[in-house]
Length: 230
Image 1 (cartoon, rainbow, N blue to C red):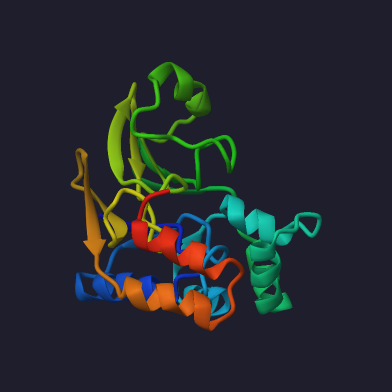
Image 2 (image 1 turned 90 degrees about the vertical axis):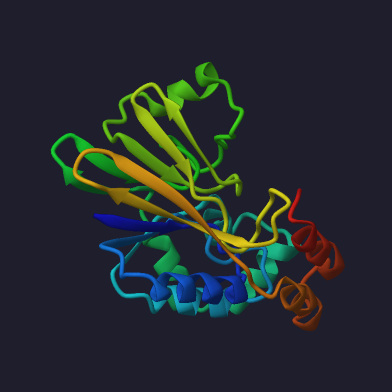
């Protein structure tokens, strides 16, 4: 079984299009998951959400920035800008997103997809996080593979009986590599295999687009994107 997981589009429709093109060029996955953070922080939130919603048979989870958009008590220039461009139907779709998705590939072998970790939408799992610090986040988790985004850095690590896979970010890379990332998880009937795929996109165009659309603090946002580090 071949499963594709991507995450953290953050309103970057150019990167999203590049990743979807790359996925289509390969064999169609048996399952496709999107691990949250759909629209906030990029110049094209409505276009990104429209493209995501057009994907048939894609299973979504909610991200922390999706929750910020939905919380009418939270206001920043970036949130208000993004919220103003989304329709009621868009917001209703985001409201419907679940916290997690699961896929059992064989008895005793299950994939769990969440945004940040199996407990909440905020606490990041980092490549160097101490086992003792993140172990409580996995108490009671029966899946043997947990895929997530949120931290925007691709990595794979083993924690006790769990294989942890950060699928990283489509729209906002942060490990000094300007390419978008998605992950392919393959179950061969015995073990899981993990492959991160990097996809180039026109980052300079997206940086200019922040200014073109009147994004709040556009120059700062563009520089953060181009640096691929924050």
